[in-house]
Length: 366
Image (cartoon, rainbow, N blue to C red; front, side, top):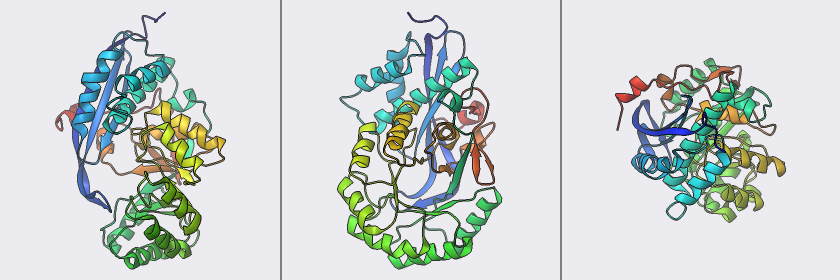
């Protein structure tokens, strides 16, 4: 029987255009001047509100917003907010025919995050403890989106991140000439020193053969991993790159289901599975992916949404690094993520602890 206190009384979506402080660049998305933030706010009968969100790199947010408000919200009203797995399945099958990924799964992700936030708030516990609790301090790196920065700007950004407390750095690769990428990676290695954790991210730029050549060229700089060297759909290609390129691979930010991760891992095509909680189906699916990785003796990393994901990795004994991204959201969050000497600290506030400046966001309403 549904508890009257946990009955879902309202599900409200939001859609905002977030300007970026600086133009960001990578090898596939080009120049990015803003992101789209899509939110889900769920209110239970006792007045408790859970908040979730997802985002895009500038387009398709309207489809996600419409899916939340038109397709998913009506199915959740009157349901028991505590039955998160049941609600996840209900949403999945409601939009399965037109879904199984893309905007559909991102809409589910936002609602699922809101449901977990609501549950943790009602229990008065931080999300990372509700999910099992391992260690509130999570190794963290600064994820630069900086492919077309000049070398001076890249190094200046790096120094700024070091001053903020980061002790691991990721940079973009995927320029038209591999020699340019190699020179930039070498310069970063020289700047950071021989043992500093450095990751490189190609954003799906290459074919498998091109990626193998690039991985071999980067080997002397000893990156922790090469990220998304080719499209996620090419599982056999990713397996070849990992086998023949000589570098560990991180990939998964563009995968939308648990089953896609299972296929990737089973093929031996990934070293660091990298789900994005706002893309893969929310907290529910992210934790299943993390446990799947653990069962295969693999470390799990993350993409984006660091204010939520810090809780998830804080509950995982097999966590690797949390990615912290400069998506511009910190200006609209009351207490942004805390970085201390290379670690992100999961807050002890109930829920995920994110409190948006709704008034400020309204000025950016789409």
